[in-house]
Length: 288
Image 1 (cartoon, rainbow, N blue to C red):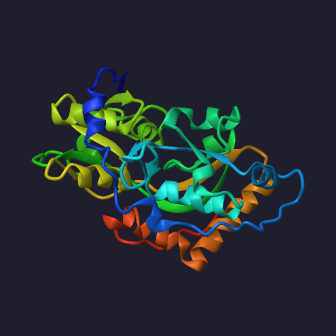
Image 2 (cartoon, rainbow, N blue to C red):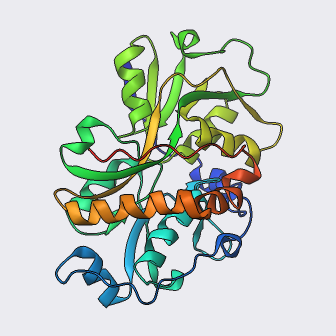
């Protein structure tokens, strides 16, 4: 396994192709704020509700889930999940501060208090549970591969031996490739959008991450790319929060389960990722 870090990858050009909004506008999935919400004094919920604002970490470069739109604000399914949480706290969407959180800085941002929660295609796994807590999952993804449209050599992970594959530093997909496919030359960068230009220019043979992220890139770059094969892992997306805040985690889990029942989860999906992808069943919340 050879691992290097990509720099100077014409990220600006790649991002320019992604700056159009994915799916409907954020107004399509507007959430009803619960202005009379009451919380036990001293809890994170009470502190946030009293403050009237919340800081949420999310991705800014991933179509369908978290992409910075023309307004400068991120749009996508993760963003709508964040708005559902804020609304349950009695916080208006314009009082949310969105902080770009790439894969490598999600745990530090939570630990250092730079964000209150992270909703950023954030796979729940045991290593991450050692330093942060998770609510959810609220979506079940799976790792797959993106190649150029005319590529016929790569149809699944077993075809990656000897190939150069781009992924993101600190991500679960990169770790999976390192652990399970040692003959792959792995090129690492800090954002998946930085992998697009190297793939176009044949500097890398493929990109790997979760299927829904790559489906967004296929949709945003019509005729250029395709998914190669079926998902080969399970990636449950959760809401990251500070370790040991059990009351807040229970609140987040309760909010997710209520959104499944009242239809707001489906509304959030169909106004964003659902423009491209079929509506799935929401996964069962794991109250570990």
